[in-house]
Length: 173
Figure 1 (spheres, rainbow, N blue to C red):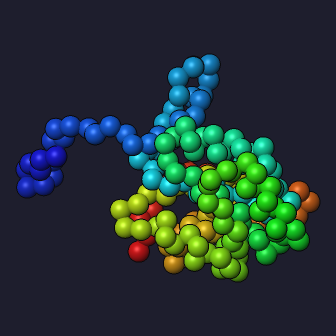
Figure 2 (figure 1 turned 45 degrees about the vertical axis):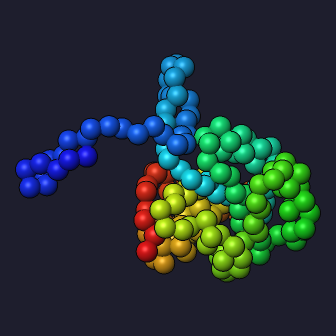
């Protein structure tokens, strides 16, 4: 990249190849994919341990992570609400062979120090997971401020309310 006009314009001389990319099916009848994130180093596969723990969904997230070429890390959030944590950890380990698994509580802060090593300088971490699993709460914790809007999940089925619907690159302090 070369700056011109006292820095108001730049000339891009080359675009480097992507190191990783998350691709989803494009809207409509098209068969091509749509890149939703690129050059992610680590992906936190966040799942809730409240009423929405689902091994098949975790398997799908693992496939997406491996296909992206990012390094997957399973984050079992809401550990404070789980009556059978050891069993859930065993179940997750049975499908996430060789993948680090961390049980945390974004609400209480328990276990969050386990995630800090993945958040080093120059590292890009993406969070994927169902609505209501705590992705925005985790993000706010590591940002040190309430940048992402959060809401409680529905009490009857522990499902999220689709509060945060966009994708953002948020530098940590």
